[in-house]
Image (cartoon, rainbow, N blue to C red):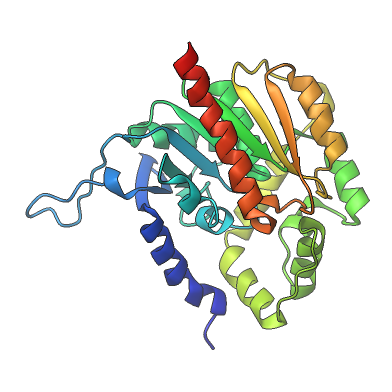
Length: 315
């Protein structure tokens, strides 16, 4: 029987190419490769006799990098944002390690390791300055990139995430949502488990036939062992947690009904970051704010990104 989610992938890939991005494999180092969706115009046509050799040019527009969460790969997460941004920006969408064909033989599973590899991949693609947009797990990777690569990262937008997952935040969140572990929440292995994840991630109740849930589980939850290790490496001790001094402007763009990382956490984080942080809530949206209310989300996102260039022109 045909997997309906897998069958829709070529359609989504085609829509992304129409929007102006296409996949490109980057070897970060021997044993580590990452898939990036990159601007079509940056991919050079192969020279005569080198059909399988593709090279890339540097981007010609301001760069925006969209970093996905834990339950889906890059273009599935950001399918409603890519086309809204490509007219004014060079858009890059990485698949983090163990998602969407990105893989490593290294044993490090920390957000810092993900951050290092995304930064190295962007460097190989000719990106030297960018704005980062991170959702959920991707938001933690984005925060780490902003901390470790201040010369690369000019500003960031984060939705439904936190700077670091401390053991107290992890325990409180999992307990409040009624799960026994982060793996039970974020790595469902049954239709019932996936429905439970969607019920806390979305503000509006979503109905899909069980067949579609089953197909999604088969396609989107591969590399289960490695992803479980990613979740384990995410949690740090409270005593090891310190808030970096971010030089970048940071915009927290939130679904006001987010049950996973609620408004209280978002406002507390804004206070911890300090004067460089701004907050904007979107009504009638939960954790999946960018999918539930994409038009409002895109408008807010573009306003913040545009303000960077307004500030730059006034200096």
